Amino acid sequence: MNAFFVNVDLAEIWLATVDTLLMLGGSLLFTVLFGLPLGVLLFLTGPRQMFERRGLYRLLSVLVNALRSLPFIILLIVMIPVTVLITGTSLGVAGAIPPLVAGATPFFARLVETALREVDRGIIAATQAMGASTAQIIVAALLPEARPGVIAAITMTAITLVSYTAMAGVVGAGGLGDLAIRFGYQRFQTDVMIVTVVLLLVLVQILQSIGDRLVVHFSRK
Image (cartoon, rainbow, N blue to C red):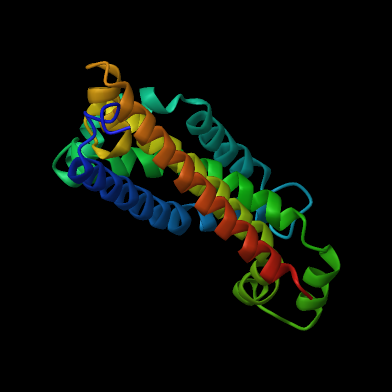
């Protein structure tokens, strides 16, 4: 086994894992901060909703669908000037977060919209009848009732971001994906490739397990 994993540098694997976790954590935080309000807005302005605005909903849908349909590897390259403007670099963890957020936010927003549509309309009507404001309806009725769906959406988005961070290695973003490309693929070091793939699989399994447990916990009546 030691002979087979001769190219594996544990210190480098550890640093790449930390970079991946930093990219995942930073991009997931901003994705939720931007995507949750966008998802709520899509829901509220959608067909047969409280604040139906067909023009605004169509505009938002076009923008969201356009970003969702753009392959992430292309988005990485297209956003390099914007990334440099925001972070001062297009490399490393900082350079990866803006395109990661841009790629995941529309995906997460659609999932939030879907989760909110599952909320019983009677609950919304009852909250309105009690004289609640729009903010109170969102905070006290919509989001608490849709909490399991929103948590599931966060879990799916986190797993998607793991694959995005791996692709970000193509443009020098660092992390496990960068290690797999530079050493596992370009230098034909199969042992490094296997270790990075296994670590990414383990990370996905951990995220899915945590998400499933939270969904079950918050689904209890």
